Length: 272
Ligand SMILES: NC(=O)c1ccc[n+]([C@@H]2O[C@H](COP(=O)([O-])OP(=O)(O)OC[C@H]3O[C@@H](n4cnc5c(N)ncnc54)[C@H](OP(=O)(O)O)[C@@H]3O)[C@@H](O)[C@H]2O)c1
Image 1: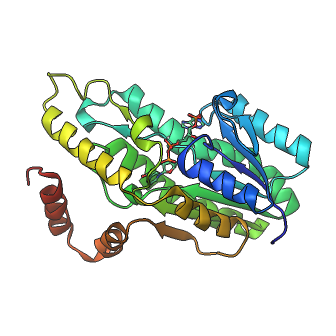
Image 2: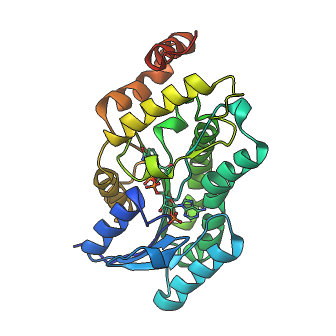
């Protein structure tokens, strides 16, 4: 057993966050998982309130862990929102909510924990991105854009804080069988008869849902995150998930965009 770490995991009520919290608690770490509704989720580890979109909520959760433990060794920025719908159908408020959760949520949590990590010259921050942060997904454009942003944010932050003894890493899962299907938010206008994209949208989202339900187990992602938290893995990026999806993302930089997108359009039955 490695040294027990104090770990804060956002979005631990479900899926990847829950599997990670459970694995780390089982292996002897001090786990604080979070949810916007902590009372609704029973767990063997400590569940506390945290909304990544709310400054006071993030500050309160970090202060609570520091008051109880005196330190935070690792943070897993896992909380995420999957927004689906054609970009044209998406309102700017819906788009803002996506970025507020998936991108600024990470910034908010990082800003709250970095002062204490820098002071101790020690800490690990794991950001959960997605393979959709490497490939623009039709009808999940704002989600993809937010996860592309997480890639850039993670690369930049890693370089900024390395000199303070803080490690930052990205975990990019492919389809994973979690609460994602139940928790997906469809943009309000996407299913209206007036949407020009309705038929394509419904078909592509149904295909996403099939792939997610048949995806990897969240425990597989949890094992990779645990290795980063424990310092057993020091790579900046970790791609996880079904082998076909990992190959697709791996070859992406070497295939001309026109050909890659022709293949995507064939897969989803879209026009070229
Ligand atoms: N499943 C996949 O196929 C897949 C693939 C690639 C990447 N990912 C990424 O993996 C991460 C976890 O996803 P998952 O599939 O495990 O999803 P999930 O089962 O739907 O869980 C989402 C978690 O995020 C939390 N959350 C949502 N909005 C929040 C907010 N404003 N503040 C705090 N917590 C919030 C939820 O907590 P409460 O509702 O309890 O607050 C919940 O615990 C996400 O970043 C997602 O983008 C998932």
